[in-house]
Length: 115
Image (cartoon, rainbow, N blue to C red; front, side, top):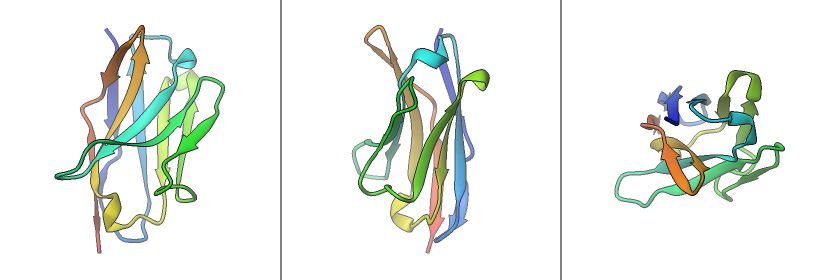
């Protein structure tokens, strides 16, 4: 059973920082491409950042230069360092991976940025 558990969300003032974590079990973490998504109220879920098994990364234009995705294969954990947060970053953040064509999601962690 593949499980993903996010943590690290919270309430922060604009300009602040947070680091999200996603712990993965039930699959060989090191070979998985891992992705962060977010969903703001009334909006569709959108891709934030992704990291491949080799460590290649890509980001949504809206977070480039502010967010950094990383992974620690020894800990089966993916991270999202979020700096210079703005109210527009307020959303539930989800981690995601795909295994044999099946998408797996965590329960999400709420990030709220106050102005």
